[in-house]
Length: 285
Image (cartoon, rainbow, N blue to C red; front, top):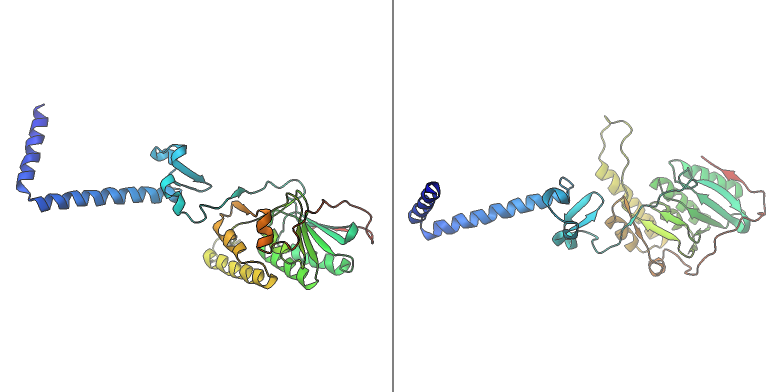
């Protein structure tokens, strides 16, 4: 009790010794310090240094995104906060493997699997060997190497082939770059076509100097030029750049047509393997 009285006396003595403008400056400095502390806390949370539970926020007070958690009040300020982001699809036994090619009936070349580095060369060899019979490249892929996807897309356009994502299948990440190469582009019922940010892979040699930001920007520029050459609305790339690399921006059916991703809106039935004009071939890498 005596201690409390002594503290009260000291406080009143301090007030008596300080004019009003000094008190206001003191209060203003206190407000500034509190504001800086709050901003620092928000910054730490936004960069993943703190989790919502570390600062006592409830799930209802936060907006969660992989690698990023921010207070709900800041969520509308985040780039792409009004956009949808679907989880990356989990590859099945077929799509988890390096992309393979199989020629089936109706001139359809089935391209299934991951676009691994160098796969564009195997694709070019397949087209060179069976080019007279191939009419449509049918894609089912989680994506992969951007450089190879660009090369495949340009070869498809050069050969004036069509592209397709069959009903219920998906074409994600870099795979749409292959799709964009088709002179005619189709998507079946409930086919999922999605994009996200491009990124540079880490250098094999950890001692080798590398500017990942510069590499990513260079890749981005190549992709934008490719979209323009293929006649695809560049808004597609805006959606890609707004979406973290571990999520997907899945285009709605009306967006596929509006952005010129597909040239035919009608659903395409899943292809049925029938005897082709030439013996079926299958190549893997």
